Length: 373
Ligand code: OSB
Ligand code: MG
Image (cartoon, rainbow, N blue to C red):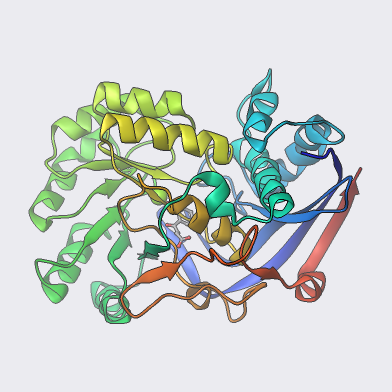
């Protein structure tokens, strides 16, 4: 790789078409970090940071990630020669704890840059083998079971191959049961609690066993593995860990303790692509299915997720809804679309992200911008 000359860091504001509510908070307008990387030969690549508005998912939020990116991550990569983007993450891990979302924003950009240099699709550079990804929808908490049933029915009619229902205490068993009864026994359903329960709720969560869910995602604490193992022993339904998995080490801990049987890999949560590939490869060897989650990304982050999800071990549908589910207008063209049978095509005919970044529109949406060089 040619040394990195410059990174432009921006924040854009992008209103969601409808508010998205999970157990730990709600968002109606995304504050999204975008990075534009430029190497010494003038090759340009875009990437996206996934840190949310508030520290209500893991400990990072956009403002902490902004500081980490500009003060600690970017100085470690600017001007430095890397043989391959897979070598970047080790440099970011050296005596630098946590801050996975901040690290990922830059690390993933380095992979996109290399894909642009080589003129290959990002999916190909990552080792992807699939040309279309089975897609699921993630439905935020609704005001009533009836409202949720309407959304879930519409999603199945649109072709989605999985319906993920966000749950919280008081909006759980009755809500999921209503969807199961409306959509029938074969509908692929799952629930995601985002940390809303404790082990004291094991009895309540066991009621979900009768509803034949594909999995229950992150019912307990965002940084826990041990208590999930105790819960898994009390449930038939497989647990899937999201927040708790940040590295191949935590994935191994999950498997060792049988704290979960499926992993939701979000490259933005685990420090980027090298870490995602390590988790993926380990899970394939351990027989653990993985799938690609989402963080309400714009079309830039979505391109990264779609590319990663093209790897062979991603055997369950990803949270990779098309652009129109989130935005009146995305910041890339073409926008991300889904076929009538719930597949998102991987753009294998174009290098890098596989979509054109709409820089004029990004300029209009930008609320702050800093050039690091
Ligand atoms: O837990 O998977 C999650 C969105 C924001 C924060 C956490 C999560 C989510 C989603 C949305 O489920 C998935 C998507 O991007 O469609
Ligand atoms: Mg989740």
